[in-house]
Length: 251
Image (tube, rainbow, N blue to C red; front, side, top):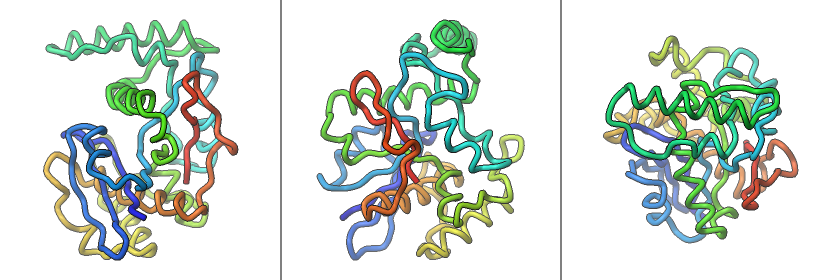
């Protein structure tokens, strides 16, 4: 079975893929739908992006976020609280100016506060991935059969599980810049799980950053764990949103 790890990147989506009997490969796709169309029908996909949206966001976000944060120690700030579906869809147009971007963020925060308990706005980091969350959401609403193949994961949760339930010691980024020591720690862990260093040290495909590439590589290992029945969902069993889309972080 083909297993695929996916992360969002500047040019769209980066996928690290391994077909039966083949070495891993990496490619960037402009859309999530295009990525899925390039895969075999039975491929298992783990993606670093929230899947399944609440009508009302509770303290800490959705159930999955609240469950995985305690596992991560100092890395738990990497798990964003995901607001309500209404907040995600409060503004769906593109942005032509930075002022329009900030205005849309303010509007999303207003809707988020009205649909959360206790009231809570939207972080800049979370707002930055709204378009990609909506992209996956639209695909899984239109094609329900994909819900058995496409699973949400999270890189730091993945690294923790792959490391014997021990969170990574070092941050992957410091003040927005890649931390070489943190990257090296994660690469060493991935190599212990079957990657060769030459693959992980290569230049990422155009349009993806080095940390996007590394996260997608971790997601591929989680896809393998899911396909092999070794992964665990948080929560277990998964929740479901109003469209029946499963809501869980797998690792």
